Amino acid sequence: MSNHRERLGYLLKHAYLAYTALIEQVLAPYGIEGREFAVLLVFDDAVPLSQQEAARRLTIDRTTMVAFVDALESKRLVERRPDPADRRRNIVSLTDDGRRLLAEATTAADEAERRFLAPLGPDSTRFTADLARIIEAFEGH
Amino acid sequence: MSNHRERLGYLLKHAYLAYTALIEQVLAPYGIEGREFAVLLVFDDAVPLSQQEAARRLTIDRTTMVAFVDALESKRLVERRPDPADRRRNIVSLTDDGRRLLAEATTAADEAERRFLAPLGPDSTRFTADLARIIEAFEGH
DNA sequence: TATTGTTATACTCTATAACTATA
DNA sequence: TATAGTTATAGAGTATAACAATA
Image 1 (cartoon, rainbow over the protein chains, first blue to last red):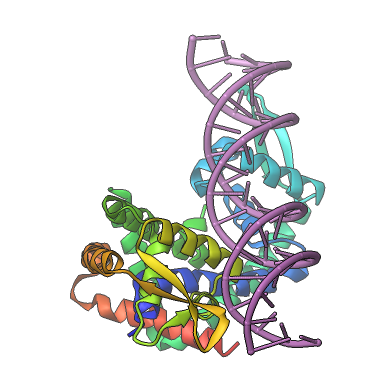
Image 2: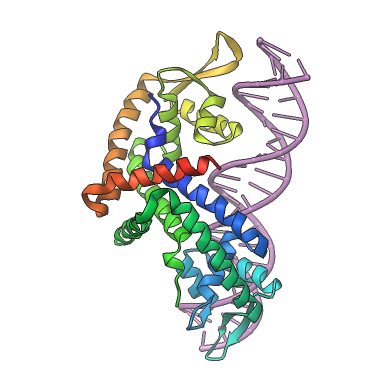
């Protein structure tokens, strides 16, 4: 009587693992990893972000963000410059190369997400909305 | 224009993190962690399992399983004994304490999952089924 | 004093390789 | 030889503490 495969924890974990495996494979040709893609996305913002603000949005540590920005900067995808208004902060912005790569990677990631959700048929948007609803409810503790 | 919070990867990750936080909190009074709960569940099987078979079912490494069984055995929740039919193997079975604790922890975990899915309303079973469908589709590569 | 970015360090989780005892 | 369990070790990934520059 093994029911561990029906437990919600198992399902959530393995859905996430499956998604991760797919997205890493799809992004590999662009020379970035899944979490680097997420960092590029958050810095591709109308209002320029400091490293710490970006880290807060992704729920990662600010020291972890240092390593991500290091990696992306060495690939010439982002640039650091001091914020003139507060020179303790770095404003991180995408380079032209970074914007180009992000556009292509986003197309590839969208296609991968479409394939990932394909088994659900036409109402896969409902599934995505359910995930958002759960997270939103949980954020209110 | 930050859309990272709408990406599927963000949603899956944070839904899993929210679930994990909830289940750890709910299981803490029983002195076990979420993954120990999963290990207890898989060993609570009609047919006795070796450590390696259990590890395969949970998709964890056999060396990782050693540590889990060590921890659960030190808590007197499971027992190792050599398989008479093949003495290289350990048959791991729940003690009476282990069965009692698993029953209580399962009730608590069920209640936590109910709360976790509550924001979805009456058709939360559809969400769970969607997760299972995605995983099943992905397992076929 | 407080905060941002940074570095050094430590801790958790997991996997790889090698050992043992059995087969 | 091959396999189950074990141990030692190493590699990610992440977090904590301390420091420099700036506020």
